[in-house]
Image: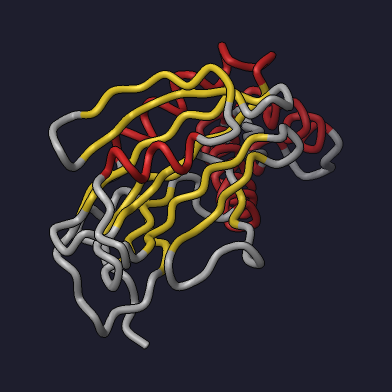
Length: 210
């Protein structure tokens, strides 16, 4: 995010003041110049933040019973997102995160589901945490690392968070991936709610009602 430091604004304000023809007594003081620079910088920063939207989002899907904190500056893929979950992308970097709920019609165990989703992946490595959680990593065979976390809800349905990023950028994305997967949590389901995104700072934020 670009910043607008006060020091960068002062030379322009001073230059403008030097060109004025009013008496010296009418010239703004240093305090007034600083206040004007502060106001200009704050206004410019507020406008930029408004254009960029919220940096950090806490996605809450009360209908499907889960929530997750999304990376700063990532953009929602509206076409790939639906009532069951969301897809967010890092613009221009080739990384994305997908968090979705899915019904477990066959009442499969988490172990059976992991075997299914791991089919075709390379270098699969992971651990089960009890009977209802799995965390693992793999390579998709196309130069991307895949980090995944699965949570089994009390009714047997599954929430899957998948973070995919270029293998060559592992150092950049490893910590982001870890933090996002840790943030995934289950909530009591509320059948009438609709998913939405809200500021992460609002810890009590929930999905908007239709």
